[in-house]
Length: 111
Image 1 (cartoon, helix red, strand yellow):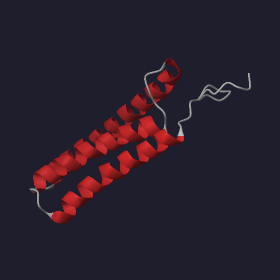
Image 2 (image 1 turned 90 degrees about the vertical axis):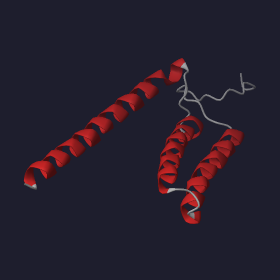
Image 3 (image 1 turned 180 degrees about the vertical axis):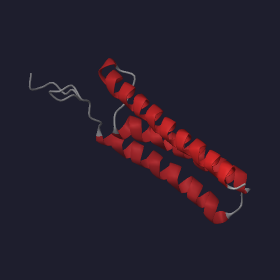
């Protein structure tokens, strides 16, 4: 079956085409340039700029996951998605817990 042109290697991992990599790169550049331009121009209120930056950063994470790490809803990627979700949960627990501890330390030590 040398004529098979599947996007999977022997381990079942999918690889993107040049078109998908270029499309992902273009999306990533746009999602970087827009907040940069907003900050550098100063034309928008600070709150709008910050919210836009966070939203576009989250979208950019999704672009990287889909176009470069090839995470999707397929059954072959289910474990990778679960590991990623678990990792995000652990990171969120560590960050929120650290901020909570630091806030309580600041509130109790400043009296």
